[in-house]
Length: 170
Image (cartoon, rainbow, N blue to C red):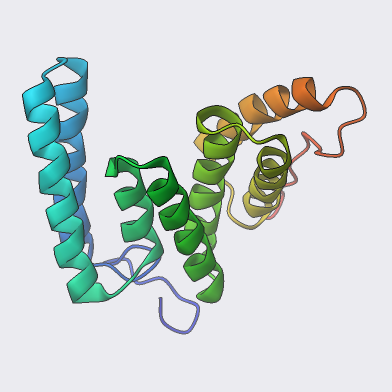
């Protein structure tokens, strides 16, 4: 991103779309292996993705989108959590509102569904709500609504996390 303007040839955090297309292709290969329940090809695609992301990190440095995708392919929950939190912090530093929304969503899902923590789940669902106000994304709004419902059930009546998202600036 340069001077607050996103180059249409780059992701919101400055990765060339031609490089990002390779990431999407490997992610598609992995998803197909998961659907086919081909564990050998899943492992191969996972290693291929991690090598690709490591090469991209050398080329671009640490970027929120690289770290967030890497989090999807690491085996350790602790490593996943660390990568996502670092991706969020970097997205905030560079005012990358798209990645703030996407990473907030991933962290909210992580703390509500993968490694449940009522306090952190509520915190990240609230951050996702605020992020959606700066960068609205329909699919992430659906994630928010689903997670809000879970957090509300855990919290009980009077939850401070509001289901309303104001995206009138979109």
